Length: 222
Image 1 (cartoon, rainbow, N blue to C red):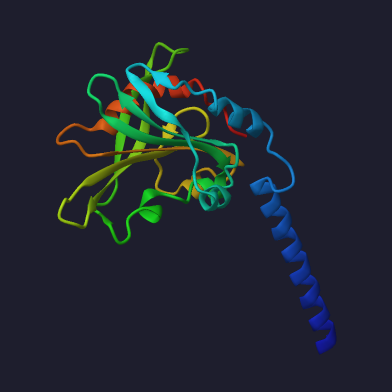
Image 2 (cartoon, rainbow, N blue to C red):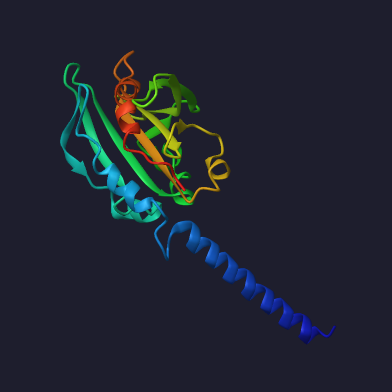
């Protein structure tokens, strides 16, 4: 085979591979068409109650910055709000989102938080939280990653994060979410954070109180 023929074949292969990768990326991110069920999932999140048991929203729903929304591809697909416990006055901040798997699962507090002001205290740990859903009398479990960050300054404030991914059923903390959820075009993700308050785990208390209600606003992912 001549060198010119080899060159032509090489160019054709590059074009074919590039085309296939473009098609795959477009399908996975929903660039050309909205995934089946995603529009309904986005809308349902907006209906999440602003009062859940003893937790009441502080102010109004918040807006994430445009860079974050664009990077995660979660336009119209998230709820960001703070909740306060009416008795203890504890406050947590929650972001609940649904969007393309490849964009959503890779962003964790370890990547997006910290920097100059805060440093990670220890490696994340898995926390299991029992939950009883309204349509099932049996107790099940949601699993979350927990990671703490400590202020580098004199105050030494600590912020605790819990985060997890869901296919519209239970929340799953997995070591490799990209491979674990690769066959699903979109997923849910939740992240809840709060200033540490002595021995009280405000985020865990919030999740224990509110997870059954949150489950009611999730739908199975495709």
